[in-house]
Length: 252
Length: 366
Ligand SMILES: Cc1ncc(C[n+]2csc(CCOP(=O)(O)OP(=O)(O)O)c2C)c(N)n1
Ligand code: SF4
Ligand SMILES: [Mg+2]
Image 1: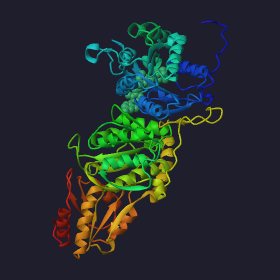
Image 2 (image 1 turned 135 degrees about the vertical axis):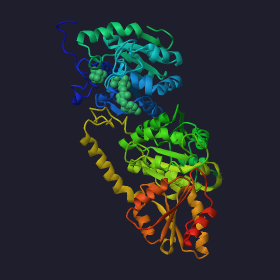
Image 3 (image 1 turned 60 degrees about the vertical axis):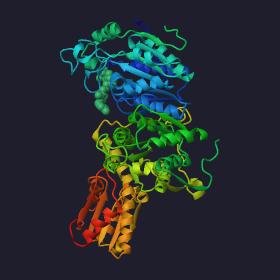
Image 4 (image 1 turned 30 degrees about the horizontal axis):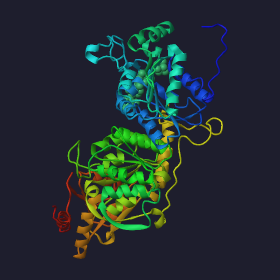
């Protein structure tokens, strides 16, 4: 880290009235939303964006931006956003959810929106746990990882392997779709992925999906160093970072 | 192309599902979201045949959760959006409709009841009354119209959009498989030609201007930090619901002043009840009927007034006491005995009702 970095400005599309935000210190949600805020600013689309947030810690973003926002139910942000986009294709619609919301309770919506090539952008925060409910196993919990419902570590023989979301979405999505996995540990790349996803929607090419590897020190019960190590070094071993589907087929 | 789907009015012979699709078109509905289930399928089928001629949209979703939540999305975008379902689909529909109720989102849902519980039968019942009126994890702040004819289906589908958008409570047209599938005469019309003004829609999200600069951002939520915050929202909604209820309530009544026996029925069973009651009244029996058209909000005072004049009441329904519970609740404290003819999941003929009514009037417990 550079010592004499000037304090970065808050993205213009953020809602200053709701800052400082409500995520725990060290939480990755804030960084994902910072990347998204900067992208909204750079694309100059604050007046056209509709943001939907799920139930999970993502709900804490219901007043995060100065963009029109709806907080939905657990797993149901994708269909609400699909419904909005179908009814008014002029809007730029973003569904923001956790790994539980997207890969467990709302997986049918994710799969079908991807397969229909719905022209929306879904951003999913993978923090390997159900954070809001106190740290239970998520579809993305790593093998042997301890959670409140896998106190002895996730036994993959009993509970299966972590869900590989972008891989799955890329496998079912069609030409025109954009699919990537980024990480808050590689902020600039994550921001690029989010930007490309939204540009994909703006170009009318179809479904775009970005999973963001993220942190939950509160439920991981890790200090700053261990938290960063987990997201930077451990998670990508199972969840490879990169682009999984790019229109025209030039994955980065 | 693009012209009015119905000019003036026209008498037609069609199924109830077809009447719903025409009504939605006539009402200026913009988009339907739906998942196939008998007996509502033909609503989607007619909508997808008629709709494209008038730039109307349709999305076939992955399930009824999605049908309900996409309908919410359509409404949030400011469109007259609707869906239709039945039975197990109505069960799934309760999650999105809880959200619509919590956030005062004017969704319109047509329910074509079928037998339950579970998959049961695919044609007919009146067993979705409790579910449709009170199915969410909330207080039932909804409007539920129970139709008993194709004309009702056409009229109340149009009205449902206006009620929903005027009062901002999720609104249901509660019908059943008989009405959905059978054919009968109905007058379909352009609402304007009847002097019915469609309540204009407006977007909740994506209004003009940059949020935070030209206008505040819309921040819609149904999550609250503290109990008191929720209570404040709910109290306001409940107060509003009660205040507008008298404007929404609809019912039909016959011969209530001269009735020793008052028959209470809704929906398609009301047709049998009305036939039986009128026939008996013509024969000199002291009998009348009361039909709640809105099951939510319920015509409480009107029923109490009618019931007070009777010596006994007869609740008739194709369910094991779902209307009955609502009636009992609304008549609490009145000292009129309530008799029942409850046949869950099957139709009830005028003859059966007449027989029961005659036995009751003769003082025989049938
Ligand atoms: C239908 C339903 N089931 C369960 C819940 C309880 N619930 C709230 S948040 C949550 C999990 C959130 O996990 P995730 O989606 O990964 O988001 P995170 O909190 O980790 O960001 C659950 C199960 C709910 N709100 N609704
Ligand atoms: S519990 Fe975890 S995911 Fe939720 S705000 Fe705190 S750190 Fe973030
Ligand atoms: Mg999570």
